[in-house]
Length: 260
Length: 225
Figure 1 (cartoon, rainbow over the protein chains, first blue to last red):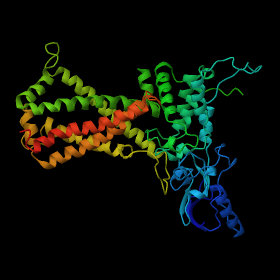
Figure 2: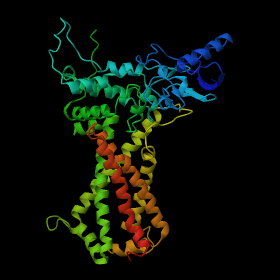
Figure 3: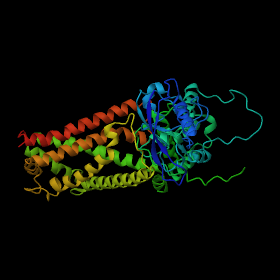
Figure 4: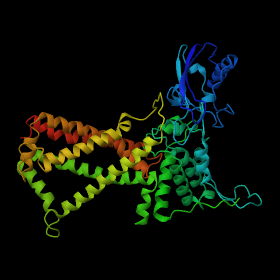
């Protein structure tokens, strides 16, 4: 396959960056998108040039490390037709002679580190502010000691499937992380273990979300359309519900003291 | 009060204020559209309806008393809606300082993508509409306390009718997304209700556009004269 690639190249966080065009004819339809980039990088290395930097890890669609805008859609999802990650997008979805534009996630909260690599620490900060349950350590509890109704368990699992790739932020016209934040809020709100901290959690996590510089939700639902795990904007409604109740009944919790 | 103020702290809280103020506007436009149909009953009935809006609740409240209560509620709703829209939009635009060279959307509708611009158009129309048929300073032949005359003479001008139709299309599009969005923002939506709220929003947008357009078109065509 012959391809023309327009790739965002940026030396570091302070570089202004620019697009560069590459041509390759060594691509096979069986290759994954990342393997295609590997091939292009091998040529760049052979020419003594800097290879294109991109994040990747498992290459099985489960870790959430890889991710880039491919022709204006995160993970090139629209091309594959079903939710997927960049590593699971295969070159057979492209045509011989195609031009592909590749960009990093664009968001104030996700600064570009290099080329297609962005810093997603903002997601960690949101999780650290409340995306957990406080469990006193001790002997492991008996299995099935806490009954969870099957539909609730399924709902919680669907929400917990988030791999934190950031496609929701990348697709959102407002670079909002409400799907990511809502997924964790909804996951823990559905389970008995999550109840104790439920309303403080939503206040803290939404506060952190806003403080990290993400935009607000305008209900475009682009996030759920590109989510490789198919998480529904139901979780955003759940978060809104919980925040509404928290606003009426709670005063703002103070930032939790670091105790570890 | 502290609980109410706490809503303005987060983007979600601000969205809820948008949803509630939007819901007030939604209720208002439905009532307004229904009231407009009195135009088909002729001058006396239409003017009696207009007068009825001023005398409603008498003798318990003074003349135009309840009307002013409604006007103040609507004014507060409009101010809240516009204020929150500007506040949230500024933040949303700042959240992506470097734009994509190429950006595509997968499932958002035209109505969703044009909500901000449509909202601005509706606001400008609101100012014109009040100057046209309430205050009369944008009306060439305005007679106070004769709304039927003002309606019929105001819509003899095809340009004026065109402005109304464009504005009502913008309103229809706004509701086509906005009514569903209202339930989603307030957290009242879920998988079980999603399709219902989407259809409600679409039906609201289409029916209100048709309902509001009938009267000016009927005047222009001479059906109401």
